[in-house]
Image (tube, rainbow, N blue to C red):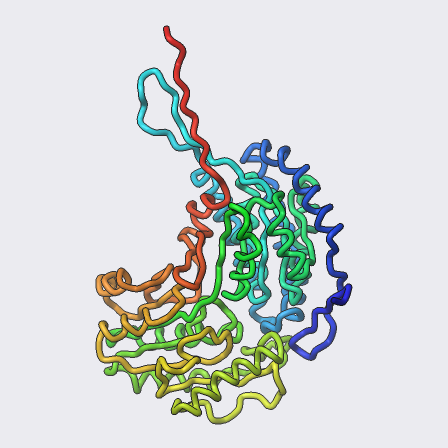
Length: 461
């Protein structure tokens, strides 16, 4: 393997950064430093940890413009939207800071005469955070901030597509005054990461990425009794009921399908529309998708940038081509761009079935399939007909009906009249092949701590 790696911009293939791969000696030094820093950070009062994490967030937000430019260069999101990810980073971080006192508070059972009894939440130690390229700031904050607040130290590894995010986070930690070793980064290969997962000095692994990647991380830690949070893929459905608020629904379903070029684990990838609304919905969707401007993401006019790599574009197009060969009908017939991959025109497919890969496997690109349904029962069956279960969205005026349907959906989050959003007050979880574990909300602190019971019997009087 080469001793270095390059981050190539999806914009034009230019080298953004070139970095050396970390060595086994680097990993040894990083984990030893984390182990040394752990006891001091663990004993730092929560109020002080919160103050320092807040200063880290301040340092990130102060560089929003620079970080947004870097993000666009590394992964290709239109610059007009990139600053929004830094805003989302701040929102989630500050909300987790506010929730920390409750999420980390001791639990006191009913009083029992002659005893003092309570349960504390103890930090695990060293948390290895493995973050992807598609939302590198937002996926990192889900684990890094609550881990630090809980008293853990963190080693952060981003995809080699977005290595600058790890570097900038550690720079912000240094600027904020976090003690040395509390937050470190490492540019590790897959092989080195597997070795670190197997190392007894790593106490928890927080991974966000593909199902295949999650399985590799799980295998690497299979010989250890180690906790893991695995935020994996999705094939998230939307169900448009006959009473959906129409204009709002079209605008938001299209945005949830195509924002970030569809490169989101919770993007809407398949849509089921009640037959009474189907034709009107399809026509309005096509009209809106045809307004996308595909181009250089540094151009303020661009609303749809490239996907991350040419090979990703090839895989996405292969799903479209296979569906069309099996009878699907593409409705975007005029190409939105003449640029080569990784630039792709958005696509809307109808006459799709669940026999087609595009309706069963994660696409992670600017394409959506739409099916007609006759009833809630049919929609529920189709929505659950997936090996994934991250989110599902319902578009209706009837909240009671949404709740009834939602209770039957095999998914971690049920939305009504919105999609593709993480509310930091709510638990973010997946079922089936979408992973395991819980981030965000006060419940997000649970997997980053362990309960410790104190059962103290008072001396005889």
